[in-house]
Length: 91
Image 1 (tube, rainbow, N blue to C red):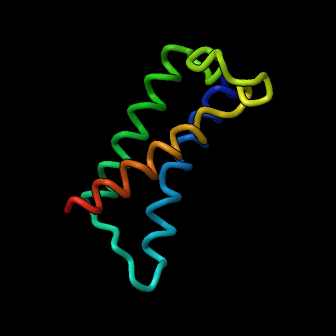
Image 2: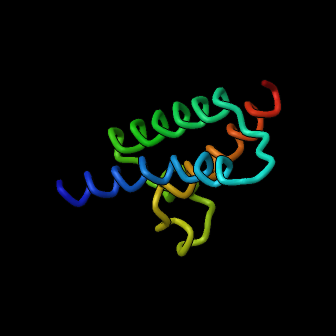
Image 3: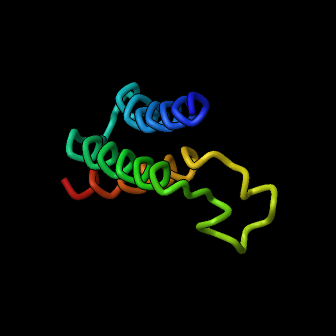
């Protein structure tokens, strides 16, 4: 149980990474709406996958075995970057 909570915590902390990097750039095009949209999307996916005990292997069975064992936080990080870029471009 503690291990699952730690993995979920690491997945939550991973969601802050794109906003941190974007805020440190000299000419950042990031917006607060993009950052909030990214955080909401990331936390929602982490909560759903954790409560339903889903893994990348269950969601994408066609992937090779080595890719099925990757932490869900990295998949959510990719989703976050996409949401962050789109939302910041639109606002």
